[in-house]
Amino acid sequence: MKCPFCNNLDSKVVDSRPDKGGSAIRRRRECEQCAKRFTTHERIEEMLPQVCKKDGRREPFDRMKIISGIVKACEKRPISKADIELVVDRLETRLQESTEREISTTTIGEWVMKELHEMDEVAYVRFASVYRSFRDISEFMQELQELLKK
Image (cartoon, rainbow, N blue to C red; front, side):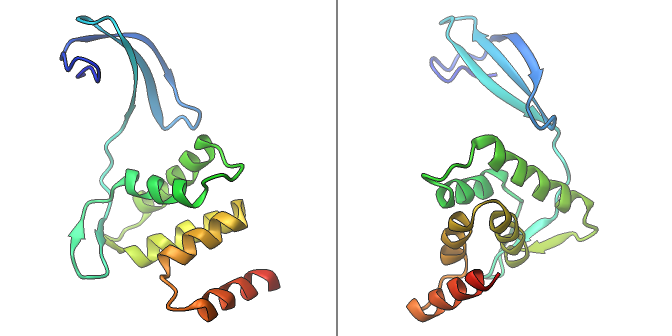
C-alpha cells in the first residue's frame, strides 16, 4: 500500500477490524520509511452492473460518486458519515442482487432519493434539485408541495 505522505510502497498493518457496517475491513497502517500512520478500507470487489448515463455512455459503478453526491446533499445536516456509508452499502447490495447487466443513472438516482427521503427531507430536496435539474422555480415548488402532502 502506497504511503500518502512519502509515496513509499512498504507499510505494515498495525491494527485491523471490520467497519461499522461489516462490509469492509478498516486497517491502520504504518509507513516503513517515514513512520507516519494512515487508514485504509478494504472491501470485496463485486461484479456490479454497468451504469448507463443519460447521454448513452456506459461506465462502471463508482461508489465514490454516489457518496460525493449524498455528502453534498447532507452538508450541514445531522447525518453521519456512517449513515451515508450504510445508504451506499444498501444501494450496492441492491445492485449486486439485481440480475441486470446494466442499470440507468435514473434508477440509481431514484433509489438514492428514496433513501434520503426516509433519512432527511432537506437532504432529499437538495439531492432532488440537482438530480432532477428543475427548469424553473415552479417545478421545484411542485416537488416541495408533494413532499408537504406526505
